[in-house]
Length: 85
Image (tube, rainbow, N blue to C red):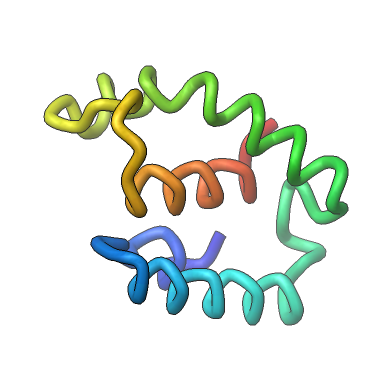
């Protein structure tokens, strides 16, 4: 995952849309570097990462609640799915 994706802060619907553009551009240029670079792998990783999001938040962002749907949570799941094994 590129530094730009990793550090991009999603706060609302518009920034989520911009984030998705960045993700798509990165996939088009660097899909060989993605852990999950086929749709079925990516969707499976999104599903698994959504289950593990609470652990990520407890370790890295203890002030966030993984059970509260936010634009940030959606982007964190996508970020996780890029690299999740």
